[in-house]
Image (tube, rainbow, N blue to C red; front, side):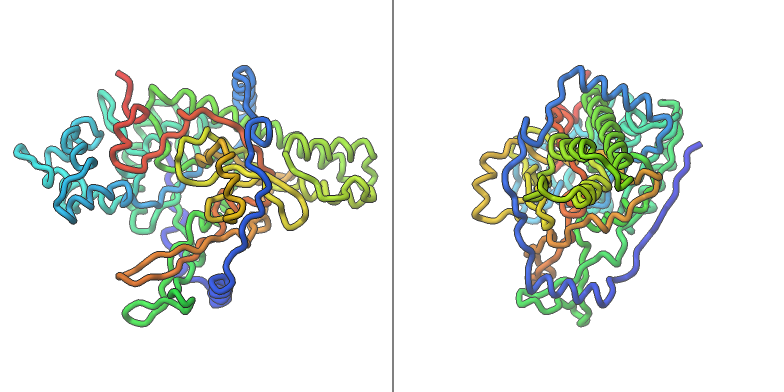
Length: 491
């Protein structure tokens, strides 16, 4: 029987005084650029799997999944405001644009088209259709999170993005018929998500023969960051109170750390496709999971062999080769000449960490982070996902050499050899936050983001990059993206 658990509804009102002081210091001092050394590419940090290897890894994952606790973690708190930016622009200016024209002319092709048409009425105009979609008296999509928006139209039903994650979960994240999902949502929409889940979980349980166990959580308010004026003094509202802002997806690390699981899939809420186009997604998700389990087994084996201070020279050499060749970690300068005990301690430190396998797609001009090698404070070089703002102007020539893009397609394991969940804060690089320029009530402000969830928050993780097909990456950035082939069910 389906189970829905609301882990948290709202966090503490604001961060501690100590945290605020640290944030104000960050605003004054800024963040250093990531010390990238080269872009990762196929054959140099990104693995391209032959088809037979993809299939065998998927079968390996399937053979073990019944003995594992598997969770699908989906950040779903983002509002769809940007998705409807052009429609808002039309209402603000009264001037039509491509998005407004397309929505009006092809309304029946959208999953929400029938409902919007009924609200707009028989004599529908551009304006009445757009208002039917966005306004609170209509569908209310202008203030709704993406997860609750109808994305896909099927011959006999329509589905929200949230529902498509339930479907995906049944197809690659089930263990012994149990599907565990964790959605992070905004506090004001907890009840909306819960109501939809209560309605649809029994439907998909019956359809797929699984049992859903779903958790909802909200971002902890203690992870918010203070906003500042351009001169780095606290930004205050009309009543003189300091303004705090959500600190980006890196603030979700505490939500992730609260999950007790052997294996966690991470995927954004809008990156879904339809039933007839999902086969590549399912195949590669299983393959990434199989590769992670294979790597984790090797990591644990090396740690077991080095747990005794008497590890032989041959065992240390084998572990060093695995770290360099399989995990793409450049060892510190002079490592080969170190005494055996120091080498062992270094290798154990590099291996006794959380593990993640990240899918990477060929770059098609999408904005966002990419895979690079970067030099770390401990002298090692490792694979990192870098955002444009983290790359120094003098290093940005490397962007033209970059071939791949980060689609947020991760499989993770953060339990140790004893099955205990690690303290994920230990692996965060606090030097990788971001400062951006924003505005509120017409006034400029500076905002601080914590190290990103799949960027600096996972800086200290064992990281492996794998090329995945472009058809596994189907985000919805604008409303008209829903008319792309990947969001239209094949007939």
